[in-house]
Length: 257
Image (cartoon, rainbow, N blue to C red; front, side, top):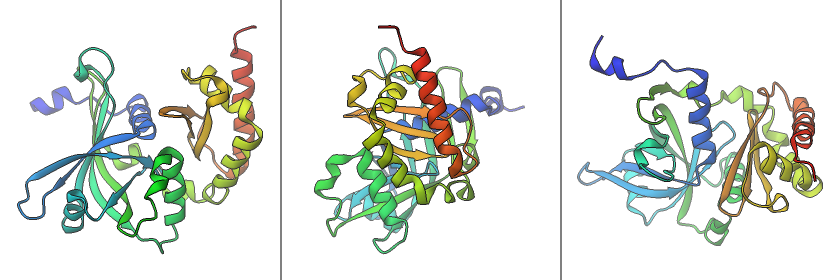
């Protein structure tokens, strides 16, 4: 057994859950590319959202150095995970390695990416449709998860990205489901955020940004919470019963008074 194997823990469900949570809750990340002219590493901060399968989405201008780098060589890495108080190295972070794929405006997936991105990055409405901006999906191949001191894992794509066939059925109904929740069930969203997720904003300030087979992203200004479903949805018909179960659970846990 070499030294690397001694420090890398076997990947378990807890590691997979942490990796997914870090990705889904990230508002921004550190994107590293290869400078086209020199091959030198080039790192930048980028705003993020996720597609339904958990693949990170970025929006970048063709005027930026990292856009030029990605068009020359799509290989990149993306690190997510915000440090809290104390030693920044004691807080979880995930580095994904893969390739960036540009999603053209005429691509059938473009409208979905645009909607999900703006739900997480509403200020991007000012420039999202400028001709020099384009969406990229960061297609991860593997990842390195550091859950804190002594908690290192090597993950494969399937450990943190959902299979395409799993999201295919939910995708056509996601927009209307999110819209319905925000228009008619704000009280339930507030309970999800404040009771189940322990969100810090008042209950009436939370919105549902997006849905996927494993949960929902809830936002309030710059705050993000991840509502994890009790089990993965097998079909769109499972969505409403799951949201009802979670609302009942939240009401039961709600402090008296």
